[in-house]
Length: 411
Ligand SMILES: Cc1cc2nc3c(=O)[nH]c(=O)nc-3n(C[C@H](O)[C@H](O)[C@H](O)COP(=O)(O)OP(=O)(O)OC[C@H]3O[C@@H](n4cnc5c(N)ncnc54)[C@H](O)[C@@H]3O)c2cc1C
Image 1: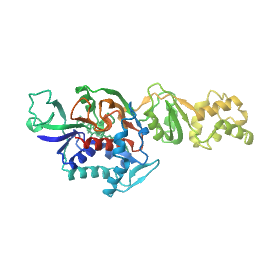
Image 2: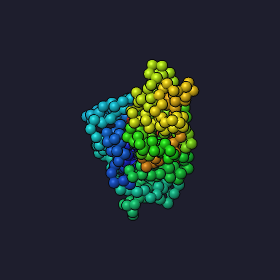
Image 3: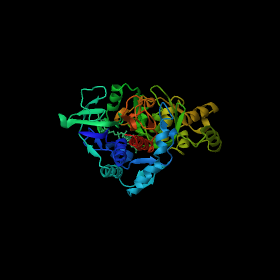
Image 4: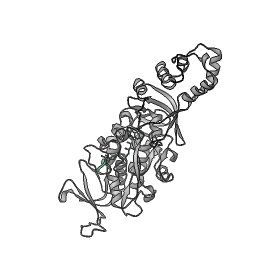
């Protein structure tokens, strides 16, 4: 069967590209090995899909070439996607920091994309695995039908063979294999000699395996607002203690900048200069215990657990010391511990729970205007399979929409 465009991956980027290419009058087939389209869209944003952000800027993306994403993001902006959402009458709200979520369910966004595809005459075929991609311009024995690419699938025989002029790889990254993620896109890049950067999990919780783990278990479910820093980046937001380590928005954000062996610097009291507050309170309320002092800003339980964990060695006579007994050096040490806690996570939870995959196909191989591989005519890459990774907050979907839209103009 012949199509103008075949898109591999019925996820965010693939469906957007399919709908727009279909509206341009191209015949479009979308193939996916999963039994359902858009599984990550359905799971996203805690079931409410954080579909974009009011404040999309190139600085919100990690990429070896920080300029690459600018063109697509400016040609299909958050305002364009919001207009589409409005056209479909989907109710939404801003949660915080410009993050836009559906009022109802993530399926509103998936249904919108599927309906756009249907109106544009796009065919979506699920449960289909691609077994081989043949470049007919090299392998001249294969019948061409004016098509550069032939796909062989698990459907077998001639009914499982598809030909197309433009082939779009929208198969995403490695995060959450149970939602259909595979390294397919990277294999295709290798087949066509395109460079890829090594991948790792991003927007992912940290695991802790040393003696801090007992504190994490004890405080599991508790959260506090922090500023967290690593490798010159910092984020302010909630940090959540879990049974395995640390999570929450600020932690997920910084995880994309963390490499094995790096320390995090965590300010547990971002609005308090603790050294100053300690000296002032020592003067005013000398009998106050350190735990009660810290519990002004953190919960009692958090204060107790952290003071005990941080200062067991400091206070030989137990931790219920009063502020009066602290000398200047001890106060500075306590302040540094809370305002600049140095913490080395053991690792991350990995692709099993990561929201995104860092790294991927080298964007220097791809035209930022068309998303086509510079040295492989008719082969396009869009979405997360590329080495473009957004911050938490709707930026990854906006990249999927924008890159899908950009490719759709040229396929
Ligand atoms: C739990 C979770 C929540 C998230 N929440 C948000 C959020 O609220 N906001 C946000 O901006 N981002 C969020 N993200 C990130 C966002 O989902 C992705 O960045 C985005 O879906 C990437 O789009 P994509 O089209 O490139 O890939 P995907 O949406 O992952 O689609 C890839 C498609 O390719 C198919 N595929 C893979 N391999 C093959 C193969 N070998 N053969 C055929 N088909 C294949 C898959 O089945 C899938 O349908 C979340 C991610 C996760 C995991």
